Image (cartoon, rainbow, N blue to C red):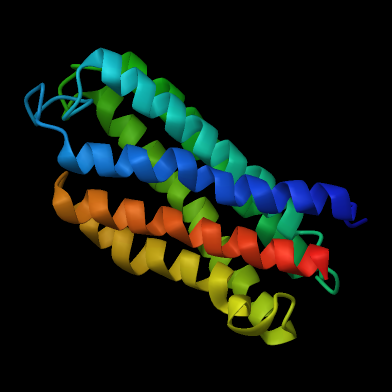
Length: 201
């Protein structure tokens, strides 16, 4: 059963709002003068600012999860699209949990088992949202469930995570990774506005 239009309207706004939290967090990470060594968790922030940034990203990921639940109710969405959007939403929840745990590791060496495990959690959450976004996005585009060029938005958000953000992160913590993550956050403004146009007719 598809979510009611009122919920999908809320979901569209949640997707747009996610960028209000995620984009400043990403830009701050890029611009902030390092307060700790780049060999410890939390770089470049001290524990106080890390807590604030992590809280903002927890909210951003949960808002994206809500938004993708709304996408699962697009008119004409089949079982594959609904399932893919549901799994992607779960991926965002995993990322939110990782952000919440992140604060507890402030100052821990990056090569410690706890930090390695958390990094693996981020990787799993990222793929849990990106790969279903690609799969579901293909069906959204083919069936034109979102209007015009917007039908490509979900697919491209997943492609961007896999082929731009992930390689940037693998090069280490630095400008390419931070800017790629910030740019990725803007896809959800696009997706949210597209969903809103569908709901509003």
